[in-house]
Length: 476
Image (cartoon, rainbow, N blue to C red):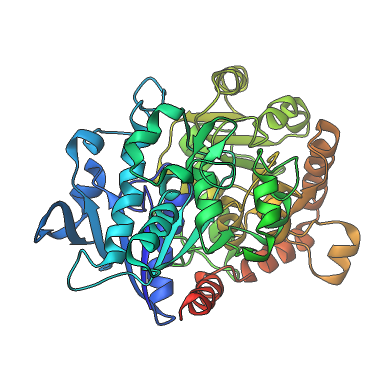
């Protein structure tokens, strides 16, 4: 099966979030299930610098064929006027979205269609698999091509990584998209008088997936449907949730080169050395009597950082420590910085993103906090499980699918892997926090839960098998 993955970022070349991790790991996993996978990306500077063996396709001067670091063949769209911008793929240094994003990502969808139509004489896609709103127009262009050719040129799959980001633009962009005029309607691109790239993907794709089974159910409801729940309910028969995986080549405490001491479930003493190294790195008190909590996240209300900030007095009163890596809402950044200034031996904050430090925090913390208001899948809690760092999460989306609370009955039956709370409210969050402190004091049970967490299998093999089966059902 010839599969074209269409995305806007990919690890290790360019990453703003979990989408890049998925885009980087999925092609290799799919190859093990009989797929001939290639990847289409904008030629952002960081991506272009990291791609080897580049050559322009004959007759297509704006399309480069090259190789990703893992050997996967990729195509880069060589349009410097759209993509030759350092930094964030979506917004400028001031944080404002680029005014021409509609052009930049319409071109991504259009070129995906061209590669299905055979514009590379050596290879054409049978399946076009687009990720998030950036690739949302690919299924629309494929439907338009069906009209032109009188046949389907390729089947399409659209994966929702986060429905809250929808790629919505004013009506003035329609003339630039080169799509049939009747595509702009309620059953098409139109969304409250605007053009929605996400809605285009949801409406025109042959199949829709999202990144966890629970999130697939949640987005069909009003609370998490972000205005598109009606579209998703109408397509419920074509919608499925496939849980993201963890790339074992990148996230594995037994061979992670980015952590100070490697370890496995049978060597948790070395994990404690990672903890001590993290405390030392940030100037925290070298204590082991209470948990060290970690956060590696966007610092936003959606991620529950407001709950953590409000609950910080309780955490500190119980002797806990907190290390934070991330950036986001200024009020939350400022609140955390202030706490670190007042409690420098207990709270440390690094604003920004640092992949190496993320590994050291996941390895060195006792508990990793992901108390999100909503969470399509979440990857950090999967990394935490693998590293024996117990996740503290809200029961929502992929968090609900991957973490089992350390309630007494779950401890008794041997299923607990972390700490889970129900409502997005301070009382529920603090109750989970207190359960973490209580379990930490019971050293034997804590170690058992750590080892059980590390035994969970969230590798890419299961997800890739599900995607490959989905692709097969779409072929004639």
